[in-house]
Length: 122
Image 1 (cartoon, one colour):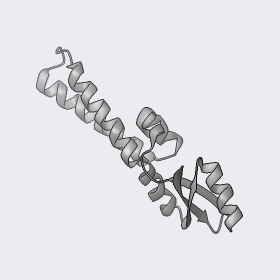
Image 2 (image 1 turned 45 degrees about the vertical axis):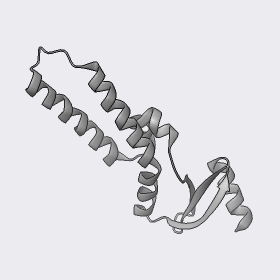
Image 3 (image 1 turned 120 degrees about the horizontal axis):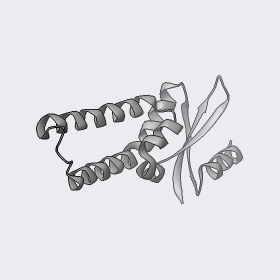
Image 4 (image 1 turned 120 degrees about the vertical axis):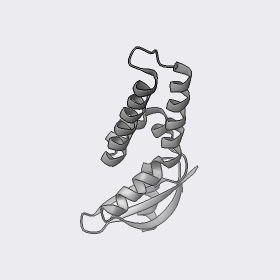
């Protein structure tokens, strides 16, 4: 079981559950996951970061050079792990920015289970 933080938006009456810890969907689908979660700043920074990396590579190696796939693979995996490690924190920060308040922490298997347990307690 995982621990979920329950967030509630008082004005809209919406409730969200966000898992504490590593975010596996963010690891495997990083930019797509961020877009689905509407984390537009994260998506924009990733696109700008990739453009910067490719631009620097072109300046250093020249446009005719073949990219070193081992280096690219290393950085791509490192970026995916970074997304997995911080993905749920970004979701939490975005919810708080939107006016959600932390209500509780619940132990559950899925976000839906966490919301159901929160309703039972509440």
